[in-house]
Length: 158
Image (tube, rainbow, N blue to C red; front, side):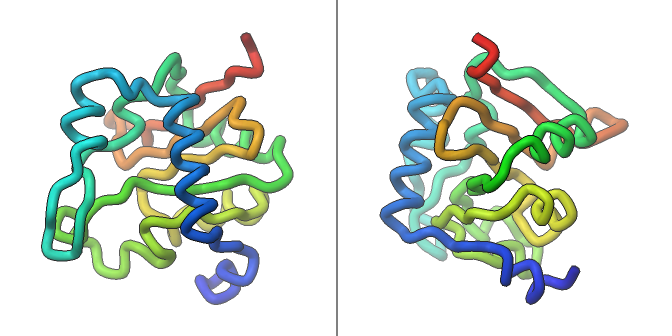
């Protein structure tokens, strides 16, 4: 599927809804009290393209488990619609051409069956959840030498 076709299946959420989602996500899944969060995410810096943070939210996940990309896709397909967003980084630091195909400060809603086949149209580091905020799947740009590193936090198991 090309990007134009993928885009037809995606709802870009409003700025205010995206902000609420990111705040709820941070409250549920991120250790906002640690120094790395304070220094690299909560503290934004001025770049040539605006104000952005320099860290990755996944570096501050609470109670995560590392999983494979295959496991991430299997987990993802259990859900109906999901919310996806990414870190708010500067293009000064991410020099991949056409990296952000959607507004970098917004979240999107998409069906998992569409998402699993179209990760290439999204930033490398993405955060996936639903409106329950009881679980999250995270895809990172990192690899362990064999495969891409992914994480799950599943508070439904508690």
